Length: 251
Image (cartoon, rainbow, N blue to C red; front, top):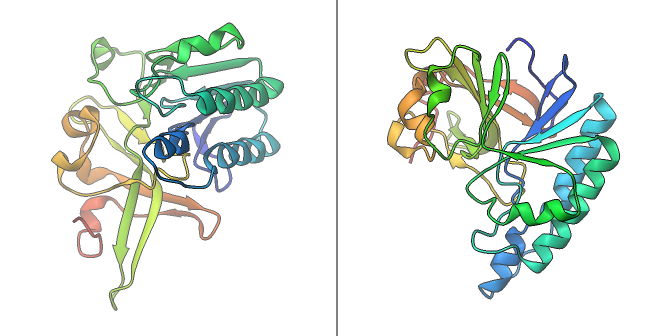
């Protein structure tokens, strides 16, 4: 959409006019939660996030980075390893840009403690007309009736689309979703999760399957276009969901 573009084959968007990079759902600290429950998974979350940021900084000029929610993972604490990895992430980002904004997500509890060492903003929404950035875990309040924005950018949903071909092969791909909001003349962009372990909520035509109240109540689901962006296949824009019914796996 006007003023917003993908960055190569990365799960991030770029406002070229304002030199702003936006990404969502890094979920730093996820491995620590798994470890606390007796499991083990390799610590790839931070490494993958840094790789994405490095590629983005090498591709476009960035003055501000916006994390569209859930930069951290643990709900009820700021974990020891989580804190160390967030410090490494913020140190890296602050070497490249002065302005860092975290749009608060449902996992971003205890994040203000990090501001003792790092200068960054924490906000509930970020308005830069014609765009507004939210995480997506809460209802839209006064923002909904505002005439100052036309395009809503959000995370939270971790969208992925599962498709079958004529011989039954199934592929599942993390994706952006781009479509219309109901009755407001506005559009929405749902960002894929950056977190490598956040494999995605399946995109369907059934409104009740979506995590976000924004998706369930304010978005015209049938108009959503999945845009798959991966290093394997590049950038692939699909038709609207209503045209994918026969090949889309919804259960």
